[in-house]
Amino acid sequence: MKGRVIMKAKIVYASLTGNDEDIADMLEEDLQDYGFETDSSDVSFADASEYEDADLCIFITYTYGEGTMTDDLADFYDQLKDIDLNGKAFAVMGSGDKTYGEHFCENVFDFEKAFKKCGAKEITAPVTIENAPDDDDIALIDQAAKEMNEKLNG
Ligand SMILES: Cc1cc2nc3c(=O)[nH]c(=O)nc-3n(C[C@H](O)[C@H](O)[C@H](O)COP(=O)(O)O)c2cc1C
Image (cartoon, rainbow, N blue to C red; front, side):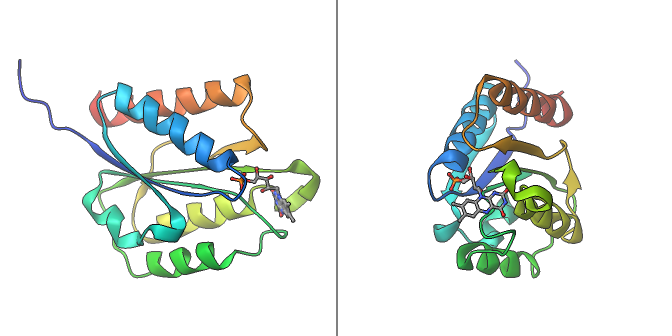
């Protein structure tokens, strides 16, 4: 069998009540099934420079307080400003609550913009989920992983 390059996916997630951690776990499992080498960290213990070793950079986040970033998110957001992710793929996902109207999943979109500024190329559309992922949301996560696989390993 020809040696295939193993793609590395780095997942960073921000989760206080577990919804985004669940999303991160599901996506990580999917990517492992597709042969990615994965590494997943809670944002409080991660440094944005860890994306420099990855082919695929993933950020999964809550949104609290009408889009105002928690300290953990703001620190990571600032770190991203100093990182060059040219040549890498990125994807963002997250859980929010539609009762927050225009602020629904606002931090997901904040980070989408931040990754673009780092030079990374968006590989899948943002997946936004209402609170805990249900079966339809799980299908969206699976579909995103499938697209990531097709684009990077296909
Ligand atoms: C005080 C408070 C403020 C919130 N503000 C927002 C918000 O501005 N936008 C949003 O989409 N969701 C908001 N949410 C909903 C959470 O983002 C949502 O419950 C999410 O699933 C939490 O993710 P986690 O379980 O990973 O912490 C808020 C929830 C709480 C308790």
